[in-house]
Image 1: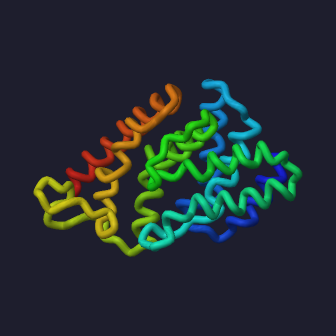
Image 2: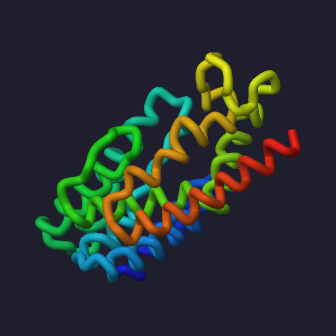
Length: 206
């Protein structure tokens, strides 16, 4: 069943931006399987939720950005119904998708929801997190950094809608402290250390 959903999602995401394409889905899927096996969870809820969690992604600048997870959940419910999932499972999977969004600021009530959130956030960290961050910044035509104060050491105020580097301080470096599972916390610590090395190297270069 998962393979059929996987093929459906791959088709739906053709042409998607690199930060939210099918490769992103599969990295989150890999993270979720690792966390789920170590923490113990219902994979029949977790894995479909991972595959379907980003069916709709609006640009961060868009006024509809906050609706991405809800609209993804709506689409996911339709797909799961077509594939014959029981309504109880559909409800649980849909909940995970609705609750996973960073912008909503929710702590999911279910373990599967928390693992989806962890697995998705891990893909915003480390080497792939850096690549995704600058990919999104480029697609939205943001400058790499504030030339007068790249690392925001003054009181200018962080603005990651204008300067991509500011996103590290507004969100990415905070994620390690927002992980729910022990497995994700350990991975997040390692990936955050790598990002700090990148920032130190960038500091030397600019």
